[in-house]
Image (cartoon, helix red, strand yellow):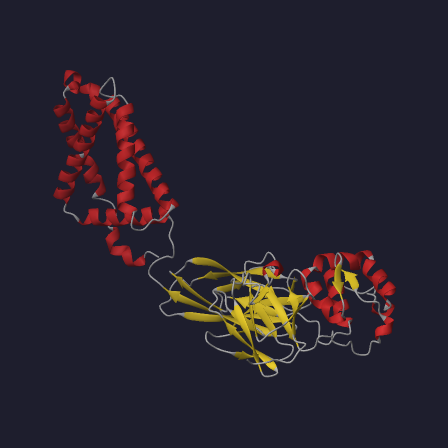
Length: 462
Protein backbone atom coordinates (compact mmCIF):
# COMPACT_ATOMS: atom_id res chain seq x y z
CA UNK A 1 0.00 0.00 0.00
CA UNK A 2 1.43 3.38 -0.90
CA UNK A 3 2.57 5.54 1.99
CA UNK A 4 2.73 9.28 2.28
CA UNK A 5 4.86 11.52 4.45
CA UNK A 6 3.21 12.55 7.69
CA UNK A 7 2.07 16.08 8.37
CA UNK A 8 -0.07 16.78 5.31
CA UNK A 9 -3.30 18.67 5.86
CA UNK A 10 -6.02 20.67 4.13
CA UNK A 11 -6.76 24.21 5.33
CA UNK A 12 -10.06 25.96 4.60
CA UNK A 13 -9.38 29.14 2.61
CA UNK A 14 -12.99 29.81 1.59
CA UNK A 15 -15.80 28.32 3.63
CA UNK A 16 -17.69 28.86 6.86
CA UNK A 17 -14.57 28.35 8.97
CA UNK A 18 -11.54 29.90 7.24
CA UNK A 19 -8.33 28.55 8.75
CA UNK A 20 -9.78 25.24 9.93
CA UNK A 21 -7.31 22.42 9.39
CA UNK A 22 -8.09 18.82 8.37
CA UNK A 23 -5.28 16.32 8.82
CA UNK A 24 -4.86 13.84 5.95
CA UNK A 25 -4.56 10.28 7.20
CA UNK A 26 -4.15 7.00 5.37
CA UNK A 27 -3.35 6.47 1.71
CA UNK A 28 -6.61 7.77 0.21
CA UNK A 29 -9.19 10.37 1.22
CA UNK A 30 -12.56 11.05 -0.42
CA UNK A 31 -13.62 14.70 -0.42
CA UNK A 32 -17.25 15.74 -0.73
CA UNK A 33 -20.40 16.90 0.98
CA UNK A 34 -21.15 13.60 2.70
CA UNK A 35 -18.76 10.69 2.02
CA UNK A 36 -18.70 7.74 4.39
CA UNK A 37 -16.91 8.73 7.63
CA UNK A 38 -14.46 5.87 7.22
CA UNK A 39 -13.36 6.94 3.72
CA UNK A 40 -13.00 10.71 3.77
CA UNK A 41 -13.84 14.26 4.82
CA UNK A 42 -17.43 15.54 4.96
CA UNK A 43 -17.32 19.21 4.00
CA UNK A 44 -21.04 20.02 3.77
CA UNK A 45 -20.82 22.22 6.88
CA UNK A 46 -18.29 24.46 5.09
CA UNK A 47 -20.66 25.37 2.24
CA UNK A 48 -22.16 28.85 2.47
CA UNK A 49 -25.04 30.44 0.56
CA UNK A 50 -23.34 30.14 -2.83
CA UNK A 51 -25.32 28.24 -5.53
CA UNK A 52 -22.16 26.21 -6.21
CA UNK A 53 -22.53 22.88 -4.44
CA UNK A 54 -20.25 19.88 -4.15
CA UNK A 55 -21.34 16.30 -4.74
CA UNK A 56 -21.62 13.79 -1.87
CA UNK A 57 -18.43 12.14 -3.25
CA UNK A 58 -16.71 14.87 -5.26
CA UNK A 59 -13.00 13.98 -5.50
CA UNK A 60 -10.40 11.44 -4.38
CA UNK A 61 -6.99 12.21 -2.86
CA UNK A 62 -4.46 9.38 -3.18
CA UNK A 63 -0.96 9.06 -1.75
CA UNK A 64 1.75 9.22 -4.40
CA UNK A 65 5.25 8.92 -2.92
CA UNK A 66 5.82 12.00 -0.79
CA UNK A 67 2.84 13.92 -2.16
CA UNK A 68 -0.76 13.42 -3.30
CA UNK A 69 -2.76 13.09 -6.52
CA UNK A 70 -6.33 14.29 -7.01
CA UNK A 71 -9.06 12.68 -9.16
CA UNK A 72 -12.52 14.02 -9.90
CA UNK A 73 -15.23 11.42 -9.27
CA UNK A 74 -17.34 12.49 -12.27
CA UNK A 75 -18.97 15.29 -10.30
CA UNK A 76 -21.51 17.57 -11.99
CA UNK A 77 -19.83 20.84 -11.04
CA UNK A 78 -16.26 19.68 -11.52
CA UNK A 79 -13.16 19.82 -9.31
CA UNK A 80 -10.52 22.52 -9.74
CA UNK A 81 -6.87 22.90 -8.72
CA UNK A 82 -5.48 26.43 -8.84
CA UNK A 83 -8.58 27.34 -10.90
CA UNK A 84 -7.86 24.67 -13.54
CA UNK A 85 -10.43 21.92 -13.95
CA UNK A 86 -9.36 18.36 -13.27
CA UNK A 87 -10.43 16.37 -16.31
CA UNK A 88 -12.38 13.14 -16.03
CA UNK A 89 -9.99 10.24 -15.56
CA UNK A 90 -7.02 12.55 -14.88
CA UNK A 91 -4.80 12.06 -11.83
CA UNK A 92 -3.60 15.58 -11.03
CA UNK A 93 -0.29 15.65 -9.15
CA UNK A 94 -0.44 18.13 -6.27
CA UNK A 95 2.19 20.34 -4.68
CA UNK A 96 2.43 22.08 -1.36
CA UNK A 97 0.26 25.21 -1.45
CA UNK A 98 -2.09 24.08 -4.23
CA UNK A 99 -5.67 25.26 -3.77
CA UNK A 100 -8.46 22.71 -4.38
CA UNK A 101 -11.96 24.02 -5.18
CA UNK A 102 -15.02 21.86 -4.49
CA UNK A 103 -18.20 23.80 -5.18
CA UNK A 104 -17.82 27.05 -3.23
CA UNK A 105 -15.24 25.66 -0.78
CA UNK A 106 -11.51 26.30 -1.29
CA UNK A 107 -8.92 24.17 0.52
CA UNK A 108 -5.14 24.67 0.54
CA UNK A 109 -2.85 21.65 0.68
CA UNK A 110 -0.20 22.09 3.39
CA UNK A 111 2.78 19.80 3.84
CA UNK A 112 3.61 20.54 7.49
CA UNK A 113 1.67 19.99 10.67
CA UNK A 114 2.88 23.30 12.05
CA UNK A 115 1.49 26.66 10.97
CA UNK A 116 3.69 28.49 8.47
CA UNK A 117 6.17 30.83 10.06
CA UNK A 118 5.53 34.55 9.75
CA UNK A 119 8.46 36.30 8.06
CA UNK A 120 10.21 39.08 9.96
CA UNK A 121 7.75 38.90 12.88
CA UNK A 122 9.09 37.38 16.12
CA UNK A 123 6.43 35.15 17.66
CA UNK A 124 7.00 36.64 21.10
CA UNK A 125 5.56 39.96 19.90
CA UNK A 126 2.15 38.50 19.00
CA UNK A 127 -0.52 36.88 21.13
CA UNK A 128 -2.30 34.44 18.85
CA UNK A 129 -5.10 33.87 18.10
CA UNK A 130 -6.33 37.22 16.83
CA UNK A 131 -10.13 37.50 16.94
CA UNK A 132 -11.53 39.68 14.13
CA UNK A 133 -14.54 39.86 11.82
CA UNK A 134 -17.14 39.15 14.48
CA UNK A 135 -15.09 36.64 16.48
CA UNK A 136 -13.28 34.65 13.78
CA UNK A 137 -10.06 33.14 15.13
CA UNK A 138 -6.88 33.77 13.11
CA UNK A 139 -3.64 31.98 14.04
CA UNK A 140 -1.46 33.59 11.39
CA UNK A 141 -1.49 36.68 9.21
CA UNK A 142 -2.20 34.46 6.20
CA UNK A 143 -5.46 33.34 7.81
CA UNK A 144 -6.66 36.95 7.99
CA UNK A 145 -7.03 36.99 4.18
CA UNK A 146 -9.70 34.27 3.86
CA UNK A 147 -11.47 35.72 6.91
CA UNK A 148 -11.64 39.07 5.11
CA UNK A 149 -13.23 37.38 2.09
CA UNK A 150 -15.89 35.74 4.28
CA UNK A 151 -16.50 38.59 6.75
CA UNK A 152 -15.68 41.71 4.72
CA UNK A 153 -18.60 43.78 6.01
CA UNK A 154 -17.97 42.94 9.68
CA UNK A 155 -14.24 43.56 9.33
CA UNK A 156 -14.88 46.88 7.58
CA UNK A 157 -17.20 47.96 10.41
CA UNK A 158 -14.50 47.09 12.97
CA UNK A 159 -12.02 49.20 11.03
CA UNK A 160 -14.35 52.20 10.78
CA UNK A 161 -15.24 52.08 14.50
CA UNK A 162 -11.58 51.79 15.56
CA UNK A 163 -12.09 48.34 17.06
CA UNK A 164 -9.59 46.74 14.69
CA UNK A 165 -6.84 49.16 15.74
CA UNK A 166 -7.58 48.48 19.40
CA UNK A 167 -7.34 44.71 18.86
CA UNK A 168 -3.98 45.03 17.09
CA UNK A 169 -2.55 47.12 19.90
CA UNK A 170 -3.64 44.52 22.46
CA UNK A 171 -2.36 41.79 20.13
CA UNK A 172 1.13 43.29 20.26
CA UNK A 173 1.38 44.84 16.79
CA UNK A 174 0.37 48.50 17.05
CA UNK A 175 2.48 49.15 13.94
CA UNK A 176 -0.12 47.23 11.90
CA UNK A 177 -3.10 49.25 13.13
CA UNK A 178 -4.97 50.84 10.18
CA UNK A 179 -4.39 54.58 9.82
CA UNK A 180 -7.42 56.68 10.68
CA UNK A 181 -6.48 59.33 8.11
CA UNK A 182 -5.99 56.93 5.19
CA UNK A 183 -7.71 58.37 2.08
CA UNK A 184 -10.56 56.67 0.29
CA UNK A 185 -13.78 54.88 1.19
CA UNK A 186 -14.09 52.34 3.99
CA UNK A 187 -13.66 49.50 1.48
CA UNK A 188 -10.50 51.09 0.09
CA UNK A 189 -9.09 51.60 3.59
CA UNK A 190 -9.70 47.94 4.45
CA UNK A 191 -8.06 46.88 1.20
CA UNK A 192 -5.00 49.04 1.97
CA UNK A 193 -4.75 47.52 5.45
CA UNK A 194 -4.84 43.96 4.09
CA UNK A 195 -2.06 44.86 1.66
CA UNK A 196 0.10 46.10 4.56
CA UNK A 197 0.01 42.79 6.46
CA UNK A 198 3.18 40.62 6.50
CA UNK A 199 1.58 37.68 4.69
CA UNK A 200 3.44 35.01 2.76
CA UNK A 201 1.44 35.79 -0.37
CA UNK A 202 0.13 39.15 -1.58
CA UNK A 203 -3.37 40.25 -0.62
CA UNK A 204 -4.88 41.00 -4.00
CA UNK A 205 -8.20 40.56 -5.74
CA UNK A 206 -8.72 38.12 -8.60
CA UNK A 207 -11.45 38.30 -11.22
CA UNK A 208 -13.55 35.42 -12.55
CA UNK A 209 -16.02 36.07 -15.40
CA UNK A 210 -18.95 34.00 -16.65
CA UNK A 211 -19.66 33.54 -19.48
CA UNK A 212 -16.38 34.13 -21.25
CA UNK A 213 -18.06 34.32 -24.67
CA UNK A 214 -21.48 35.62 -25.72
CA UNK A 215 -23.28 34.71 -28.95
CA UNK A 216 -26.49 36.65 -29.62
CA UNK A 217 -28.84 35.83 -32.50
CA UNK A 218 -30.80 38.90 -33.53
CA UNK A 219 -33.08 40.27 -36.20
CA UNK A 220 -32.04 43.64 -37.69
CA UNK A 221 -32.93 46.57 -35.47
CA UNK A 222 -33.65 44.42 -32.39
CA UNK A 223 -32.37 45.37 -28.95
CA UNK A 224 -31.09 42.89 -26.38
CA UNK A 225 -29.74 43.08 -22.83
CA UNK A 226 -27.33 40.49 -21.44
CA UNK A 227 -25.59 40.11 -18.08
CA UNK A 228 -22.20 38.80 -16.99
CA UNK A 229 -21.41 37.42 -13.56
CA UNK A 230 -18.23 38.89 -12.08
CA UNK A 231 -16.75 37.12 -9.05
CA UNK A 232 -13.89 38.21 -6.83
CA UNK A 233 -12.11 34.95 -6.00
CA UNK A 234 -9.04 36.61 -4.49
CA UNK A 235 -8.39 38.52 -1.28
CA UNK A 236 -8.94 42.25 -1.42
CA UNK A 237 -11.05 44.82 -3.22
CA UNK A 238 -11.60 44.20 -6.93
CA UNK A 239 -11.60 47.39 -8.99
CA UNK A 240 -13.11 46.81 -12.41
CA UNK A 241 -13.93 48.96 -15.42
CA UNK A 242 -15.54 47.73 -18.66
CA UNK A 243 -15.11 49.13 -22.15
CA UNK A 244 -15.71 48.00 -25.74
CA UNK A 245 -13.10 47.25 -28.40
CA UNK A 246 -13.09 48.49 -31.04
CA UNK A 247 -14.64 51.79 -30.01
CA UNK A 248 -16.36 51.92 -33.41
CA UNK A 249 -18.61 48.96 -32.45
CA UNK A 250 -21.57 51.22 -31.69
CA UNK A 251 -23.96 48.24 -31.53
CA UNK A 252 -22.44 47.13 -28.19
CA UNK A 253 -22.74 49.35 -25.11
CA UNK A 254 -21.76 48.97 -21.46
CA UNK A 255 -24.60 49.87 -19.11
CA UNK A 256 -23.53 51.94 -16.06
CA UNK A 257 -22.17 51.76 -13.44
CA UNK A 258 -19.32 49.51 -14.54
CA UNK A 259 -18.33 51.71 -17.48
CA UNK A 260 -16.46 53.60 -14.75
CA UNK A 261 -14.38 52.06 -11.96
CA UNK A 262 -16.60 49.79 -9.87
CA UNK A 263 -15.60 48.16 -6.59
CA UNK A 264 -16.46 44.48 -6.10
CA UNK A 265 -16.05 42.73 -2.76
CA UNK A 266 -17.65 39.37 -3.55
CA UNK A 267 -19.77 39.34 -6.73
CA UNK A 268 -21.26 41.76 -9.22
CA UNK A 269 -23.68 41.49 -12.15
CA UNK A 270 -22.67 43.68 -15.09
CA UNK A 271 -25.07 44.47 -17.94
CA UNK A 272 -24.50 45.20 -21.61
CA UNK A 273 -26.90 46.34 -24.31
CA UNK A 274 -26.81 45.13 -27.88
CA UNK A 275 -28.68 47.01 -30.62
CA UNK A 276 -28.47 45.15 -33.90
CA UNK A 277 -27.80 47.27 -37.01
CA UNK A 278 -30.82 47.96 -39.20
CA UNK A 279 -29.31 45.79 -41.91
CA UNK A 280 -26.58 43.19 -41.51
CA UNK A 281 -26.15 39.84 -43.23
CA UNK A 282 -22.93 38.54 -41.66
CA UNK A 283 -21.93 38.00 -38.02
CA UNK A 284 -20.17 40.92 -36.37
CA UNK A 285 -18.10 40.76 -33.24
CA UNK A 286 -16.53 43.01 -30.63
CA UNK A 287 -14.65 42.52 -27.38
CA UNK A 288 -15.76 43.52 -23.92
CA UNK A 289 -12.56 44.46 -22.08
CA UNK A 290 -12.65 44.16 -18.27
CA UNK A 291 -9.75 46.01 -16.73
CA UNK A 292 -8.63 45.43 -13.16
CA UNK A 293 -5.46 46.40 -11.32
CA UNK A 294 -4.31 42.79 -11.37
CA UNK A 295 -5.07 41.75 -14.96
CA UNK A 296 -7.31 42.35 -17.97
CA UNK A 297 -10.06 39.95 -19.07
CA UNK A 298 -11.63 39.85 -22.51
CA UNK A 299 -15.10 38.58 -23.35
CA UNK A 300 -15.90 38.02 -27.02
CA UNK A 301 -19.38 39.18 -28.05
CA UNK A 302 -20.71 37.85 -31.37
CA UNK A 303 -23.88 39.16 -33.03
CA UNK A 304 -25.39 36.79 -35.59
CA UNK A 305 -28.19 37.73 -38.02
CA UNK A 306 -31.41 35.76 -37.98
CA UNK A 307 -34.74 36.11 -39.76
CA UNK A 308 -36.66 35.38 -36.58
CA UNK A 309 -36.79 37.40 -33.40
CA UNK A 310 -35.69 35.53 -30.34
CA UNK A 311 -38.39 34.26 -27.96
CA UNK A 312 -41.29 36.43 -29.18
CA UNK A 313 -44.11 37.01 -26.77
CA UNK A 314 -47.67 35.93 -27.52
CA UNK A 315 -48.70 39.44 -28.62
CA UNK A 316 -45.86 39.48 -31.16
CA UNK A 317 -46.82 36.03 -32.43
CA UNK A 318 -50.47 37.02 -32.77
CA UNK A 319 -49.54 40.21 -34.64
CA UNK A 320 -47.37 38.30 -37.06
CA UNK A 321 -50.11 35.74 -37.66
CA UNK A 322 -52.71 38.46 -38.29
CA UNK A 323 -50.45 40.23 -40.78
CA UNK A 324 -49.91 36.99 -42.69
CA UNK A 325 -53.64 36.27 -42.87
CA UNK A 326 -54.36 39.77 -44.24
CA UNK A 327 -51.65 39.37 -46.88
CA UNK A 328 -53.10 36.07 -48.06
CA UNK A 329 -56.63 37.52 -48.06
CA UNK A 330 -55.56 40.33 -50.42
CA UNK A 331 -54.20 37.80 -52.88
CA UNK A 332 -57.64 36.19 -53.50
CA UNK A 333 -59.79 37.42 -56.43
CA UNK A 334 -62.47 39.98 -55.61
CA UNK A 335 -65.30 37.55 -56.38
CA UNK A 336 -63.90 35.01 -53.93
CA UNK A 337 -63.56 37.66 -51.23
CA UNK A 338 -67.18 38.83 -51.77
CA UNK A 339 -68.58 35.31 -51.58
CA UNK A 340 -66.45 34.36 -48.52
CA UNK A 341 -67.34 37.52 -46.59
CA UNK A 342 -71.06 36.96 -47.21
CA UNK A 343 -70.85 33.34 -46.06
CA UNK A 344 -68.83 34.24 -42.92
CA UNK A 345 -71.26 37.03 -41.93
CA UNK A 346 -74.23 34.76 -42.45
CA UNK A 347 -72.61 31.97 -40.42
CA UNK A 348 -71.79 34.34 -37.55
CA UNK A 349 -75.40 35.53 -37.39
CA UNK A 350 -76.62 31.96 -37.58
CA UNK A 351 -74.30 31.05 -34.68
CA UNK A 352 -75.74 33.95 -32.64
CA UNK A 353 -79.22 32.67 -33.32
CA UNK A 354 -78.37 29.10 -32.32
CA UNK A 355 -76.69 30.35 -29.13
CA UNK A 356 -79.85 32.27 -28.26
CA UNK A 357 -81.90 29.11 -28.71
CA UNK A 358 -79.65 27.33 -26.17
CA UNK A 359 -79.36 30.14 -23.61
CA UNK A 360 -81.47 33.27 -23.72
CA UNK A 361 -84.98 34.67 -23.59
CA UNK A 362 -84.94 36.64 -26.85
CA UNK A 363 -83.25 36.58 -30.29
CA UNK A 364 -80.91 39.34 -29.16
CA UNK A 365 -80.06 38.09 -25.63
CA UNK A 366 -76.32 38.42 -24.89
CA UNK A 367 -75.76 35.49 -22.52
CA UNK A 368 -75.71 32.65 -25.04
CA UNK A 369 -73.59 34.44 -27.69
CA UNK A 370 -71.03 35.58 -25.12
CA UNK A 371 -70.50 32.05 -23.74
CA UNK A 372 -70.33 30.43 -27.17
CA UNK A 373 -68.09 33.04 -28.83
CA UNK A 374 -65.71 33.32 -25.84
CA UNK A 375 -65.27 29.55 -25.81
CA UNK A 376 -64.71 29.37 -29.57
CA UNK A 377 -62.26 32.29 -29.38
CA UNK A 378 -60.15 30.54 -26.73
CA UNK A 379 -60.13 27.27 -28.69
CA UNK A 380 -59.20 28.97 -31.98
CA UNK A 381 -56.43 30.98 -30.28
CA UNK A 382 -54.85 27.85 -28.82
CA UNK A 383 -55.23 25.91 -32.06
CA UNK A 384 -53.56 28.68 -34.06
CA UNK A 385 -50.60 29.40 -31.75
CA UNK A 386 -50.08 26.20 -29.78
CA UNK A 387 -46.88 25.33 -31.68
CA UNK A 388 -45.25 28.70 -30.94
CA UNK A 389 -46.45 29.53 -27.42
CA UNK A 390 -45.36 27.77 -24.23
CA UNK A 391 -46.32 27.67 -20.56
CA UNK A 392 -48.00 30.83 -19.34
CA UNK A 393 -48.13 32.12 -22.92
CA UNK A 394 -50.81 29.50 -23.66
CA UNK A 395 -52.99 30.90 -20.87
CA UNK A 396 -52.48 34.40 -22.26
CA UNK A 397 -53.42 33.26 -25.78
CA UNK A 398 -56.56 31.48 -24.54
CA UNK A 399 -57.63 34.54 -22.54
CA UNK A 400 -56.98 36.87 -25.46
CA UNK A 401 -58.96 34.60 -27.80
CA UNK A 402 -61.88 34.49 -25.37
CA UNK A 403 -61.78 38.30 -25.12
CA UNK A 404 -61.88 38.69 -28.89
CA UNK A 405 -64.83 36.28 -29.08
CA UNK A 406 -66.69 38.21 -26.38
CA UNK A 407 -66.17 41.53 -28.18
CA UNK A 408 -67.30 40.02 -31.48
CA UNK A 409 -70.48 38.64 -29.89
CA UNK A 410 -71.32 42.02 -28.34
CA UNK A 411 -70.76 43.80 -31.66
CA UNK A 412 -72.96 41.39 -33.63
CA UNK A 413 -75.78 41.54 -31.08
CA UNK A 414 -75.55 45.34 -30.98
CA UNK A 415 -75.83 45.56 -34.79
CA UNK A 416 -78.73 43.08 -34.72
CA UNK A 417 -80.59 45.11 -32.12
CA UNK A 418 -80.09 48.31 -34.11
CA UNK A 419 -80.77 47.08 -37.64
CA UNK A 420 -82.96 44.00 -37.66
CA UNK A 421 -86.17 45.73 -36.43
CA UNK A 422 -86.28 47.33 -39.91
CA UNK A 423 -87.30 43.92 -41.28
CA UNK A 424 -90.48 44.04 -39.23
CA UNK A 425 -92.10 40.66 -38.76
CA UNK A 426 -89.38 39.01 -40.83
CA UNK A 427 -86.82 39.80 -38.10
CA UNK A 428 -88.00 36.70 -36.23
CA UNK A 429 -87.40 34.42 -39.25
CA UNK A 430 -83.82 33.22 -38.82
CA UNK A 431 -83.16 32.14 -42.48
CA UNK A 432 -84.25 35.57 -43.76
CA UNK A 433 -82.08 37.37 -41.18
CA UNK A 434 -79.04 35.24 -42.07
CA UNK A 435 -79.52 36.01 -45.80
CA UNK A 436 -79.75 39.75 -45.11
CA UNK A 437 -76.53 39.64 -43.07
CA UNK A 438 -74.75 37.98 -45.96
CA UNK A 439 -75.89 40.73 -48.35
CA UNK A 440 -74.95 43.52 -45.93
CA UNK A 441 -71.42 42.09 -45.60
CA UNK A 442 -70.69 42.56 -49.32
CA UNK A 443 -69.65 46.23 -48.98
CA UNK A 444 -67.05 45.17 -46.38
CA UNK A 445 -65.27 43.06 -48.99
CA UNK A 446 -65.37 45.95 -51.47
CA UNK A 447 -63.74 48.24 -48.86
CA UNK A 448 -60.87 45.82 -48.17
CA UNK A 449 -60.11 45.54 -51.88
CA UNK A 450 -58.91 49.17 -51.84
CA UNK A 451 -56.36 48.67 -49.03
CA UNK A 452 -52.62 48.48 -49.74
CA UNK A 453 -51.30 45.18 -50.95
CA UNK A 454 -48.89 44.36 -48.15
CA UNK A 455 -47.66 41.20 -49.78
CA UNK A 456 -45.42 43.23 -52.03
CA UNK A 457 -43.67 44.77 -49.05
CA UNK A 458 -43.09 41.67 -46.97
CA UNK A 459 -39.37 41.75 -47.43
CA UNK A 460 -39.21 45.26 -45.95
CA UNK A 461 -40.71 44.36 -42.60
CA UNK A 462 -38.04 44.09 -39.93
